Every structure is written in structure tokens, then in C-alpha cells.
Image (cartoon, rainbow, N blue to C red; front, top):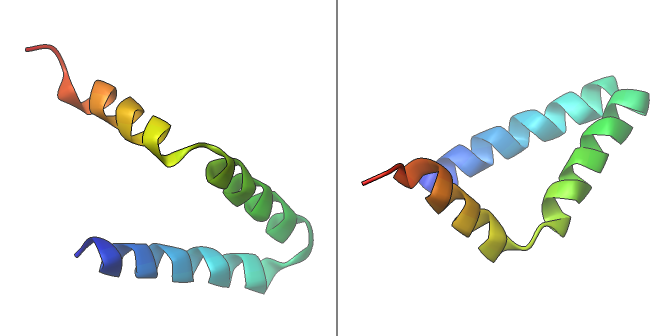
Length: 55
């Protein structure tokens, strides 16, 4: 299920970037660059802290 969601979101994101092109494409690609620069383990730990709440 997670892979299907990733495919749908990635396809829509790429289609929007490709359709509008130019400045919109540049901004969207910089967002992807920022996300790719963040280490994956850090993202997992951050999500754990945000979604675990207080027990």
C-alpha cells in the first residue's frame, strides 16, 4: 500500500512539475533536493517523536 501511495504522489508531483515547467519546476525540484539531503534515519526519529505522543 505504501508503494502505491508513493507512486501516485510521485507521479502527480512530477506531472505538475513537467506541465508547468520553468519557475514552478525549479521550486519543486529544490524542495525534492532539500528532502533528499535530510538523512533518512533522522526523518524516522523525528516522525517517531511527533507521532508517538506522551504515554
